[in-house]
Each structure stands twice: as C-alpha cells, then as structure tokens.
Length: 353
Image: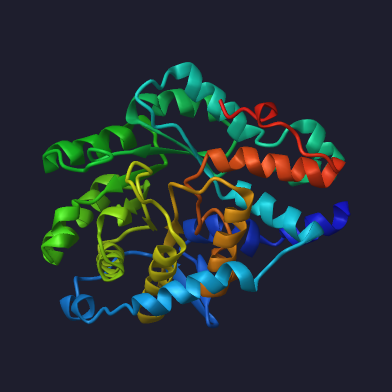
C-alpha cells in the first residue's frame, strides 16, 4: 500500500508536488498549463472594461453543476489517502483571533511542520513524503514569531493585511500595512478589497486599489480576498475576480472567514472558470484559495475534484491552490488514522495549537 500511496500522491512529479513550479516561476518559466498551453505567472494587464461588463453567469446552471460535482467523483483506498495528503500540502494553517499570542502561533507552526502524528505516518509508510502544510497565516504582529518558528522548513508565512477583515481603513494606512509585513519578512500577503467598489460597479477604482496593493507587495505573493459572501451575486463574484486578475493578483481568494457565508462550491466554480478564461486569453496563471467554512476531509476532496476538473492537474499543488482551513486538518488526521488502524480516534487526539 505504501508505494501505491506515494505514486498516487505524485512524489517525484514536480508538476504535482509544486516544487518544480516554484523553481520554474523563479526562473521565469511556466507555472501551469491548460489545454496544452504553458502559462506564465500573472503580471496583470491593463483594465479591460468591455471584458468586465460582458461577464455573465447562469446561476441555476452553476448551482446544478456544483451539486453534481460532489456525486460524480469518488476516491477510495490508496487514492483517498493520497488526495488527503495533497489537501494537507495545500493548506494555509491560520490563526486570526483577537486573543492570539506568540505561544499560540508557535504551537501552530509546530503543527505546520508535522501536521500528521508520527505514529500514523509510520503506519502509512509515508515517512519519505515529508508532508507539511504550505503556509501559516497570521496577523502582522506575529509575522516575526512565525518566521522564527518555521525557519528552515520551507513553509511560507502569510500576513493578512489592508484592514482585514473589513478593508475599510484609509488607503494609505492599508498600503503601509502591506509594506510593514513585507519588510518584516512575510512571503505572502492576503489583502482585502473594498466591497463597495463592486456594489457600485466602480471597476476602475477597484483595479487601481488592487494594483496599488500589488506594487506595495513587491516580491511577496498577493492573494486578493473578494469577500464573496458579501458580494450578493455570482456575477459580482465573476467580475471582481476578473478585475483582481487584471490588476496582478497571484491568487484570488473567496473569503476572510469572517463573513456569514464563506467558501461555497458555486462560488468556487465561478472563480475557477474566471481563472481558466483569463489563462486562455492572456497566457498567465492565477492561483485559487477557498477559505472559511471548510471543515471536513470530505469537503477537501470536493474542492480538489473541482480544481482537477475545471483547471487540471497543474493547479493541484501549493503554488497554485490553497485551502484556508485549519479545522479541516483534524478531520483529515482522523481519516488517515482510520485508514492505518481501522479505528476512528477522538477529536481531542488531534489538537491544532
């Protein structure tokens, strides 16, 4: 079983593990491919208002497609273990609570380094895989703590910024917040858009805001949080996605996790199809991050299936896909232990931090 898990996970296949993509991006090479076309990292394009205004979404068709997604594809046995391991490798472990402390962040970073209990790793025979999460996401105040705790691990540190979660502080303060986190050493910045620009159809203002954030990020990757639960319609979600990509987003992200409604499969379908259209039109690839409300191992499989079917295998790596879901890791651990032992463990055996 061990060798089958490792083969299905994609060890040695850089197109799946993401390591080759990271190197290719650094060298200016392709980071993904779609329909046989190699894609470059996103550099953004001038705002095309005609493209934005022409965006249409058939809501009922999207909802039907999302419903069939969870019933059409199932993965079993070694394939399921491999998919769950892939889900872990694409996670941004996150703590964004008002009572966060340095110690909590250090514990979360320890979990990021070793997301699966060592006895389960041995039972599954996957020691050589070296599973770890993609990033740890924190407030600016904890960037340096996370960097020290993750030193030498290869795990990224992401900082939420721009007046997270509302994004309503003055623009100069939001830009300064980005710069402080980049100067502190953050590898990735999760920025929040002004949702009012979407409601008012102020696409030029939205584009300029995101482009300003992109410039402030410098070498750091920028994930643009749309706050899809606040955007009211799937058409608004699609239009905001297109504008964010034009403005230079490295990733588009569904939610802050603080909205009443967070990541849903219909929203994910709309955003991934916007990514696909943008890739085909521009030759540039943008990553995707669903965040908020993703809590179970089964949900992780649904989202991976969505990515595989809509964008293909080259998006199934941490360079192009992330989960903003910390609580999901505990359920995945329980599923892996069941595969290894035939018994479900209690939730308290898998603490997060």
